[in-house]
Image (cartoon, rainbow, N blue to C red; front, side, top):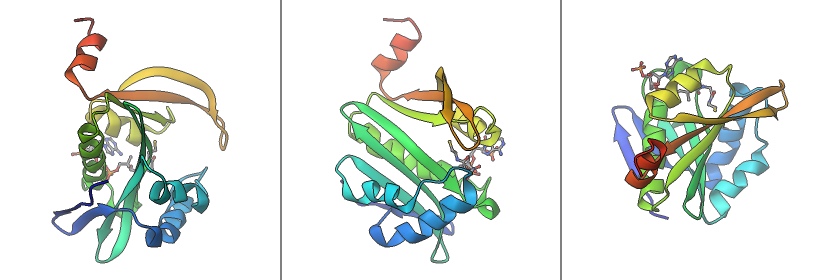
Amino acid sequence: MKKRAMVDQDVVIRNMAEDDLDRVAELEKVIFPDPWPRSAFDDTTEHDGWGGFVAEADGDIIGYACYFIICQESHLTNIAVVESWRRKLVANQLLNAILEIVTESECEFLLLEVRPSNLPAVAFYERHGFTTLYRRPNYYRRPPEDALVLVKYLTEKETRATNGLV
Ligand SMILES: CC(C)(COP(=O)(O)OP(=O)(O)OC[C@H]1O[C@@H](n2cnc3c(N)ncnc32)[C@H](O)[C@@H]1OP(=O)(O)O)[C@@H](O)C(=O)NCCC(=O)NCCS
């Protein structure tokens, strides 16, 4: 997988590395009611097709996003930004880094799950062209909630098929 680092003002976006996982797991616990354990992030740095990016400011990790690719499908498994850095386009940069990778890998779409009650995240995804594919009942446990499965089509063929043009 290509290594990259993007710089926008004070924020650097770079590949997630093994050394980042303690801090990422710490942020995950603060940000989510149902956090991934640290061990779940090992896949991101250890397995082919899995990857992640961190956003860094002044040497501290202020956001992260992970994905995996299987055949022509890609999945955004999580994306988060610390509260004090929100609405500064940090998640936007993290998502763009992932979109660049999955598009280069010739994925046809990027999928994700989100809580319907998570209005900031839903607004963020809508802003980036994701649409709802279906609702998955009782997907989340703590607290219990359905999931919206969202998709962003990455190829012209897939976009036209959705619009009923092919
Ligand atoms: C969702 C989240 C990752 C967005 O991160 P962010 O860095 O604040 O997002 P950005 O600044 O890149 O936002 C880009 C655009 O998305 C939309 N957006 C983001 N947050 C929004 C909010 N709270 N309300 C409405 N729209 C929002 C806006 O259109 C925004 O552009 P604008 O600020 O110019 O209006 C962040 O709120 C977060 O970490 N939430 C907690 C973790 C989480 O729920 N992750 C998603 C799990 S599925």
